[in-house]
Image 1 (cartoon, one colour):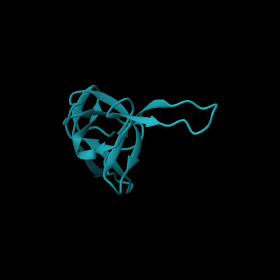
Image 2 (cartoon, rainbow, N blue to C red):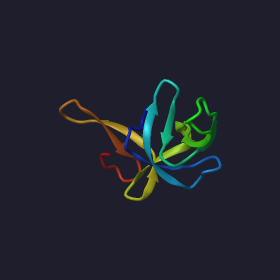
Image 3 (cartoon, rainbow, N blue to C red):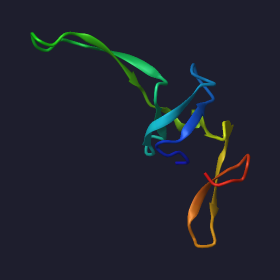
Length: 100
């Protein structure tokens, strides 16, 4: 997966297209990411006891990683990989060529 927790990404498809946010969770097996404050779903909770009340909880839901692009220096870019001389593999922004 080309994204990591803490990366700033821009959503390129769906109802939230054009908006940016920070990744708070990455699920590589499902190829999904959770972005803070984006793709919000409302969940209704039932009161389970006398002192607890029913409530509506807003929760960010996972979205497919193919619907987001990494943002480097304020612009969305594709992500590639490069192997350094010492053998470490690093992510590289395709638009600028610099390491992420």
